Image (cartoon, rainbow, N blue to C red; front, side, top):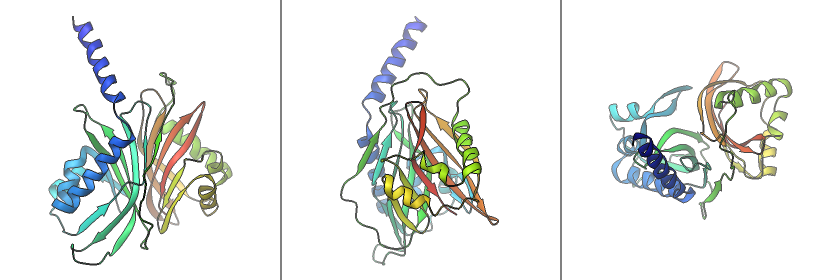
Length: 271
């Protein structure tokens, strides 16, 4: 009987995930932003962050749920909207990125702008929760989002190599970067790749991303901290620190499987 219950449970879980799509992440992100404007930053972050959610403070990865649930709200109006969303073929993990604005109060002018990036994961109750949140400020006006781009992985394999993990995927890339510098990025990007970088508006599409790669120094030192690989091995994310000239910042990379190759679908790189 227990065996049958397990099979039924797995079937229901699979059916639940199959109903999810990139649009469901868009809805979750918009609801998150609306709550931020209405109820404040701390309350909205605590409500939408998984209890293990990672955020970044001065080059360090910290628990975001704990940070925003235990510290007083400093006020201010933080608003944002999704611009690019991706979801794995398993339909239980994905990402979103888009422009954000910050002002001291509803009647004040905007004093901060940038690009947010969130990794979303479907929890056991069927709710999307943020497991990682990261920003890249750029300070100047950005074009208003008129339509959300959505990427859906179509990878169909159900097996992952025993030796494969999110960190092994990342370390393979880092080792290549150590050998050839920024050229390592060229073979890893696609027409769907998106790069966020501090003090720059985002880059999307093969040619724009390749133009951004040219300015990436060959002397960055990447140290991955943690990440996750989906069960069927089509989607992985890794975050860590990036160091140059004793300056420590953070980075995030989202990898998607295309055939036998791993491609860089999203990167946030601050240095």
